[in-house]
Image 1 (cartoon, chains in turn purple, red):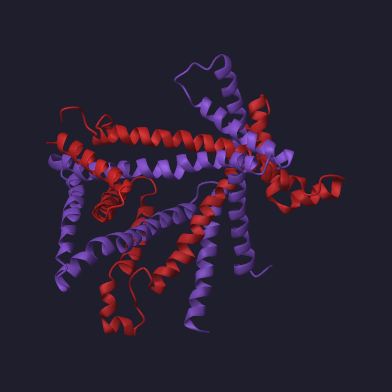
Image 2 (image 1 turned 30 degrees about the horizontal axis):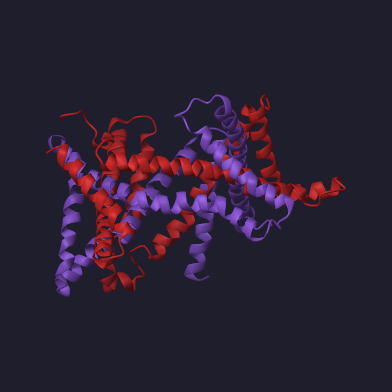
Length: 223
Length: 231
């Protein structure tokens, strides 16, 4: 047996036993579950730390600095500034200087907020409005030649978006027309939440089926 | 110094990022990309604090011998193994280690093996556990007492039944009309009332994000600074 095949077989056994350890929680909290749970936390933290270092610090901090010294691309030395700012996070460990942590936090929040304004406008607001209104232009261009069911869908979409937004509009008291429209919004919201719930359940059930399939097919070779 | 400088920094970086996004000038693009790279350098340092907190929590559990303290060693064990194999790529240059088949870094076979056979199965199993808890919670909480609750329940049932082939199979076997109606009804719900509600929610959230971002940049919202005023 090849070394790779042995490791693959061991891997399937490890994965199967850890899967059973986690499912044992369905009976009640027990040492097997706690074993898997704590191992999962440790492995996950280690994995994401490695990923952050290899995909964040090394390409954006280490490589430009290395290029600055090796290939004399001196502009890379600018990266000492964000490294210095990042190191201020360690001030959190010294209570008398803990306030210094506000500097990197303020910069990260400033960058995030500055990026959010144009990007959210472009990716969410304009695209959603575009998606809601474009069908009307298509309807007009086709000379109202679409089927009644499609026309109903286009109008329903606009009514749903406006009524949902009205429900979340708290600057006006929800009475009269506004109250009626917001009630229609609740209907759409409930259908939306129901669909989201149904999709979530089915997503989790798919994962369950996948794990059971792994146990029965890959591990026990029963199917 | 303790509050004013962070506010000025937040304002400066926020304004620069918002304005440079709109300008096609090459300097503007360079500044925009450079600041994003800065954020990508600064961000990972926050992870160090998160790890320090995790280590501190579990170290305290071990030191005080609190309930189930032995399991904290597993957290350290898992973390240290991943870090030892994943980080020191410079060790790949040592001929002896390469000769005995040991390699380091995120593409190391041991690292990939641990990811594929430990991390991924446990992640999927943890999430699949939720199927049981969601089903049990739904059984206890879902009651069609009002119109809203009925709509929620009905939409969820149609989406669930329409999602699985057996839904259409049973319908086609029992009903003489409307072939594949469950999956068609599911698709219609997802594409129409569900999408319109989601669009309304996304638009609301987006407007909230923009207004909050403006408040943060202008220094009106300062809760991220923590502490008390004047500190």
